[in-house]
Image: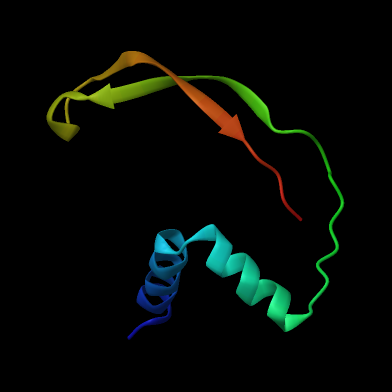
Length: 72
């Protein structure tokens, strides 16, 4: 198993887990996580561009909502 596939497997496990189970396991480690809010999330629009058949000329497909998150 490569590092990428191993990470993907763990991320899949976490994504499919119940939040209550994760919280219980986290609290059992007795690790205090410290964090500082750097900035609030930003919501906006992004122009989506595409190509016909993946190799044709570019065109504007439309707008998509985006959410920008920041972490240290």
